[in-house]
Image (cartoon, rainbow over all chains, first blue to last red; front, side):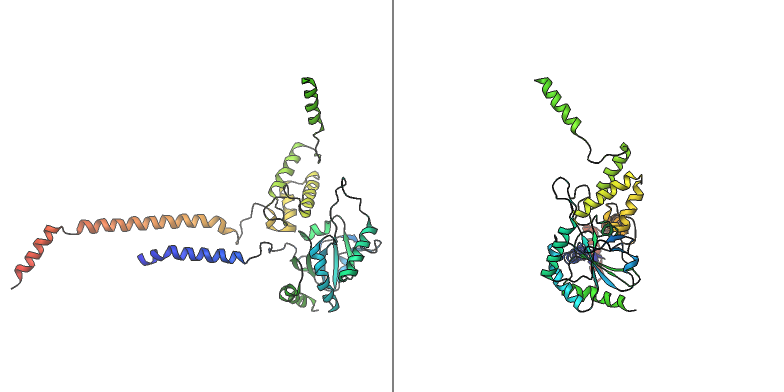
Length: 190
Length: 151
């Protein structure tokens, strides 16, 4: 018993050290998403390039796709455009959810769709265009319903419109291979 | 001069208008309470009242809108937790992951009491041992007796 008590502080210290060590390698941004395994929330938002076209959750059903939240103002989003374009060439369907910045009426110019369309076209010509089309989330209401905390974020949505994965941060070859590709394969199967 | 100053300060207080008008004082308090206890999902350890991240601005607006619609505290919290998860509220619910936050201090207290009890018991044992140990003179007589028995 004495021997056990003698080693108890050392054991407690080692346990604490191991616990804290594991904390060093954990990602503080990694957390369970509230939207996974739930249907894509209802929405009615205009296409970025063809504002007459209104997209709804119903209209997007039928095929597994990636919903990529992005904006031209976001450097990380611009950096991942190239790799996403490669994925598109491999046959992955990617839909853009354009995350527009809020405007301060006292300082910012009023929203001008033609300016935004020009900026987006320029960026997609420069870096590659991974998108089938872009949905304009001007007031970020769909983003709020999806639990988006910033750009870039990517969702995998299956053919019946259920959200199957929620990835916070950019998509690069490592992330795609290790985390998203297996999920995409799994949910693409009919 | 004094009159001018009084007029000046009075005009400041008249100018101090709310950016967000509320129907009543309860709504204002509820809004302030909610924005203080909802956590910004983008920035580590800031509530949505303090943060100016885009998502915090949007959540603040949404909270304001819901409060103006007459939603109570639980409804607004459900709305936000339904979208951003338990992370977004500074008061975690008791579930199988967070149970340890409440159990760990209790376990430590029990362990402390157990160790204290064990030490007290072993100290009593030492005392008993000391009381039963023969003194030096008693030992001397014992040894003498033992030697005298020997041939």
